Length: 145
Image (tube, rainbow, N blue to C red; front, side, top):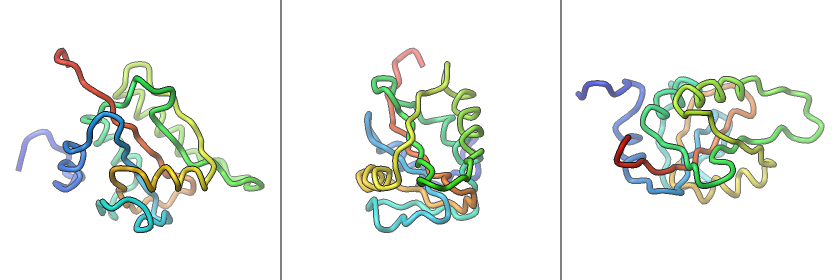
């Protein structure tokens, strides 16, 4: 065991985050996401919801400051009146870990799936909220961090 590592981060996920380079993307997928049709690397975190997992990940994961939107959410389908309140939770968590927060974009479902298919890895969670999928683009850290 190591000190300071949240228990809900499995060793496989820590390894994946260490392997990722600048510009690589990590998908945090809700329980309904078709995770096995996408990235070759799927990390199972079925007992976790995305907000608590996002909070643990953001302790270690720098977001890309060299792109307009290092965070991508899956847009609500046309005609659906559901409001994904979980997005506000994500914003609060990211603001906690990233000075000034992070810019985001909402992608149409088909575009989200296309981008997710190119991601370095998908983390399969047990999140039950609708439209809870999120993509994080990894940034860089400097020697003074």
